[in-house]
Image (cartoon, rainbow, N blue to C red; front, side, top):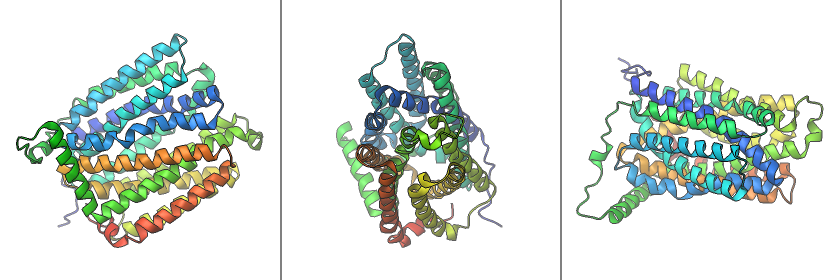
Length: 424
């Protein structure tokens, strides 16, 4: 008997509900996020202020995930998820009304992005910690392939966000759509039937106050991660990967806008051309997700595949803006296929390896450290791009990424392979 054969189909009630809720919220998010970034870049005329605006979203992720982790190991993650989606619906609805009334303030938008980052950072920890419990045994890789594929399909709507911004002259209608989508997602998430049991295995209170209990839970989580050399190496690598990837990606849109003469032969605006070309990456992720849904990677080869991908992705980051647009589109497509494979290996391996009563604390620490990398890369790239050519800065970030792959993954290959090459 094949012990790896799924004991239950993938499309259970809970998995279907969480997938529908994710898709609905993504529809509004991808339409408004890209348009909002273009609006800020147009309003300020500065790559640094554009980077600062995006960094404001990432700042709360330095603290909120790791602080939320201990609480999410003791409370209902499902309730946190749908309540935060209701809150996001209200915020985007209010912002749409304010902008429709002619209000605009860059400092206020920075504060809005800070609040949005706080909500999303806690939401991601709760979602990542609940999600594996909604998937039938031996279906985790398939589930993450579906999740990644649908997310990429939604992200392919980015050009529509740019087009809608140009046609409508603002983001107000897109924010209103986003509010409705968040509300609908929360309604879906309330229908999840899974009975959460992770709270039952949390350490007893022992008469400790809330603050003392939180400190103890946080310390236990840190000690667990520090003692798991493979998990620590993976987390540190992706902190640097986010640093280099976000730094490089941050400069792609400004490069297109600042060097529009290079793309004058194309019948669309440079920003719209970039959104179309970059969407090829999401198309690659969709195709890659479908492949992973239909076929399973051999467990004993997952580490070797992941290591190869980490090298290739950093090489692509460094070279992609030197390519002609048609070749760039093909490379973006390959980049997406590599990215979804890397994500699928990492997320399925780590989430199945983690005990449920420690999952939120690990996810919180992981989100915090990777957000630190993202923020550092975003700010440093924006600063360097004010004094150096964008492509030169990206080459520097690519070199740092290659060093991180060697230092954290290859040198710790025994511990990392023990996680990546496990049976789900």
